[in-house]
Amino acid sequence: MLYILALLIGVVAGLRAMTAPAAVAWGACLGWLPVAGTWAGFMGHWITVGIFTILAVVELVTDQLPSTPSRKVPQQ
Image (cartoon, rainbow, N blue to C red; front, side, top):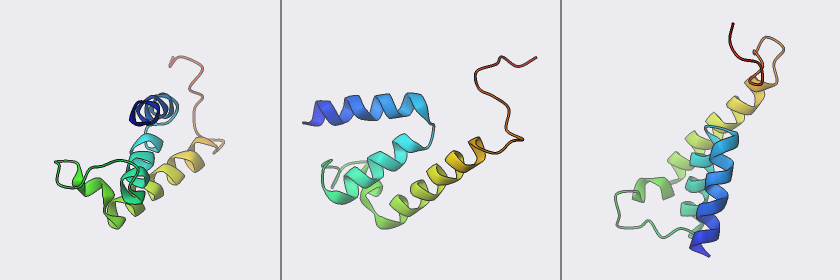
């Protein structure tokens, strides 16, 4: 199960920058990822979940704005 979650986090990290940390924070908060007592224990705190969720939503919204340059076209 842990390997499947790691694979999914890797796939999500390739799509959006802030969605992967938000997914890890939610997984740690819900108890799916055992991070208690480790250096990553802060990821399970509700404040961390809130911060990363807000950042992920802001990233998704700003990518949809008309003034945001396309990621498909190289910078000129």
